[in-house]
Length: 349
Image (cartoon, rainbow, N blue to C red; front, side, top):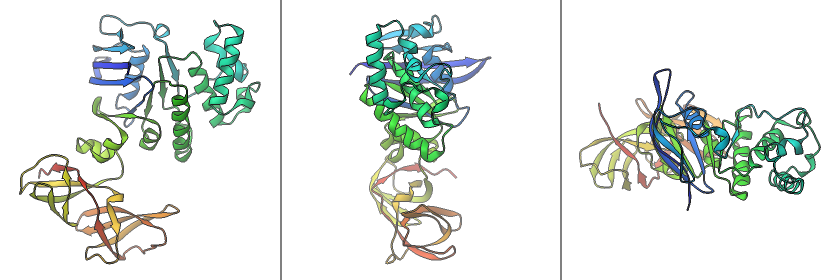
């Protein structure tokens, strides 16, 4: 597969401060990547360097095998064939939807422009809005038209900077899924920036978790969730808790939830004190279990409850149970651990 984007050892400084350092990642043609992290972690700065708005202090940006940025040179944004969708959408209010989409492809023939507008309106599932104006559209519709406009010139890479931030979290996830589908149908390579992991999981093939300007892990959503390479990633992705345990032998741990067996995420010798990552879906509510935990919090989610359970002392875990299991706060319930891949980190006192 063609490498559409490569970042090699990228560091960026602003006003003498290092914002991101030594970032390495690559995206193949047709893949969707995501830079995920808290506000101020450096993800937008990295996106701006890919677009050509920031110049790296070290390293290089390569698009389709061609170096477009290094400390010595920076190809202007308009020569990079990169599309952008920002938070504020910035549709032209005085232009119709068709003219908004056509804005970046006016150098083509009328027939080609018309065909591309039609294709894109079909892709974003809004063929009936061709002659409307932005103010006549809902927020979600405007979002999809902004996307169509950015896709119109068929950029080598589409950059999306928190494009769904004005939507509520449920709608964000749905939009991210729809947009991912649209981009794949048009075979567009894209990089999304977000602080919302549900959005990232709904849309991306590869996700980079960024913390304090460093790329902690660049991986598939599945691996980030099930095989985080550090406590920081484990902490940031999903709703996990770390439960104390001791290695009995290879593949076997003694924990506050009983003895568990499975494949270790890293080899550690018998006797090592560890922290085991436990997700809500690893804890099964089981009336026949001899392991009990006290319900301290619960939130109703329709088909299920998410319970926060106290094991002993300061250890709390999360558990998802079908909502017909409606337990009161303060009630003790039986639980068992069903987990096969044991993500463990050495416990330092």
